[in-house]
Amino acid sequence: MRKIHLIIVHCSATRCNKPFPVTSLIACHQERFGFTGYHYYITRDGQVYQTRHEQLVGAHAKHYNEHSIGICYEGGLNEKGEETDTRTPEQKTSLWHLIRSLKVDYPDAYILGHCELPGVTKSCPCFIASEEYATLQPPRQNDLLI
Ligand SMILES: [Zn+2]
Image (cartoon, rainbow, N blue to C red; front, side, top):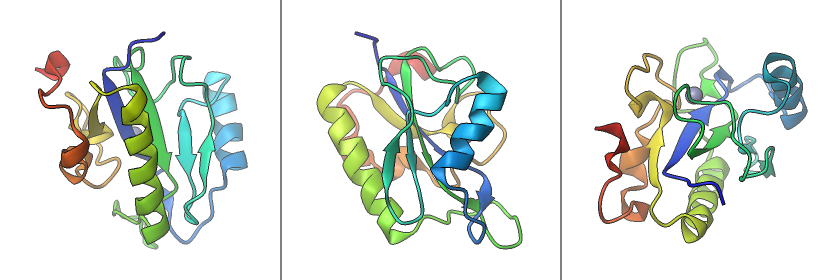
């Protein structure tokens, strides 16, 4: 079993008014990495797609891929292309349920947004995931980041 220390939340950095279906994500990542870098993708309608086996290392967070699961929601940019939390209520609900179920398998994993990792300058996923999912965090914070 791969050791999972982190559950990392991302956005696709696409405009909320421009659909970016899972097929586009897969095609885009196939070209970049040869496989889909995220383990899960959640479209604006709240549909959850598993895009990579959890036991396989992803490609979504430099230096942190080996022991993490990557989840991406469709959006993250508003109509003008500005970084914004564009999650729909359906996406928020699906994210919550997905993370809660992952925590059953990986109870010690710490949940955070891409932008909360050291050295990351972008705002992805445009909200503070570690705070939003505070009640799902392990009792002792993962010390990997310190
Ligand atoms: Zn990201």
